[in-house]
Amino acid sequence: MIQALAKKATVRDDVATESQERPAIRIKGLSKRFGSFTAVDNVTIDIARGEFFMIVGPSGCGKTTLLRILAGLEAPTDGSIDVSVEAGSQRPVNSMVFQGDSIFPWMTVWDNAAYGLKMRRAPQAQIKEVVGHYLDRTGLLKFADAYPHQLSGGMKQRVSIARAFANDPEILLMDEPFSALDAQNKLLLQEELLRIWEENKKTVLFITHDVDEAVKLGDRIMVMTAQPGRVKTVVPVSLARPRDVLELQQNPEFGKLVHQIWSSLREEVQRARELDEAKGVRK
Ligand SMILES: Nc1ncnc2c1ncn2[C@@H]1O[C@H](COP(=O)(O)OP(=O)(O)OP(=O)(O)O)[C@@H](O)[C@H]1O
Image (tube, rainbow, N blue to C red; front, side, top):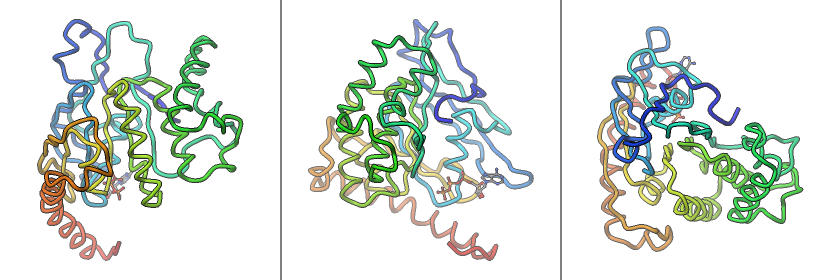
């Protein structure tokens, strides 16, 4: 359920020597149609190794569809995706973190976080070290024996994050992981995510509706158009790292970027609403 279920995206393993120069993900002319309906249209983008790449766009513009194609859960209708992995790598291609509950309710926090490594039959000592590390980094070590029903929403999302990082994938796919959280918990989890990410700079693709979140976390932000989902613009975020998500809000550059993204997004949100109204669907 969580990890690289199928490698439907092309996985290149012939790039060990040139992997530094090659993008981690190369998406070329990617389209997805469901019957006669075009959800994603001709998306072309390179994502660099170690990049924190944000995707924003109006509801229904194909963000999740794009991520599901990257995860191998959906096949593209046209175009291609190349994910470059180091030659001989045993690591999974990707791990996904969704919004809401995506951890196994019948497993303890520890077992949830260890799931990917156990499935790969990693040595016990490695599981102990890696899972212990990420539970510690997410403040969950003392809840290692707890079950999900004993945890708050924020803690469950922490387990998802610990599990995803412990799995050590080539790329991390995050679909609105914090959207169900209250503002305070969201801020804490954003801080934690950045802190953990700074340790090993994984390539991350992160979908959000929250423009502030996109600017706080991302290296670049892709704004998608309303139906069909195309690349409208890609905005680089030049804010220095490591970032303090609270302090950032006082940074004039942060405000400018939020305004820039919103200006680009606003007409797409408006267009999505008109399209929905024309179809008789109100959101
Ligand atoms: N399996 C499917 N069959 C038919 N239509 C689908 C399928 N999956 C998605 N769609 C449609 O494709 C479009 C894009 O959906 P998707 O979930 O990717 O959008 P999104 O941008 O992630 O939306 P949101 O922001 O609301 O989560 C929507 O109109 C959706 O109804």
